[in-house]
Length: 175
Image (cartoon, rainbow, N blue to C red):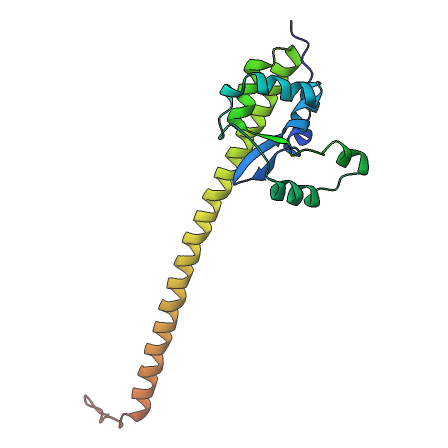
């Protein structure tokens, strides 16, 4: 039986970044989760580079790297380990990592990461559906507002006509 070490959802989801309009994870974070050195992870990727096309893995540009570093709060010791732009893995790249890292911990970690990516995707879908529903409600409310304004303008017109009318002579039975 595999010795399953569960990582918290929060720990993993805090290591998912949004770069180039994609949800990605950094090589150093993945190495930490897998329990290996970043250097070893990069070695394995370079040995199997044909498995990692640009939509699976890419390196941050200097500008992206600088921007990313400025957005996270890192101690000096963390910055020391970031001399080079990190490799960044998309969801598919992380899946591919499972084929080149054969430890039990790497396999279990990958399973957890994939489950969290799925949850994040579902939350984004749910959020999108809610936004669409809200937009539809707003459109209906705008139409209701216009209709209410129209009704009030008709009532105002009727009231003006009533004021300008001359009294009518009553017809019918008189007592």
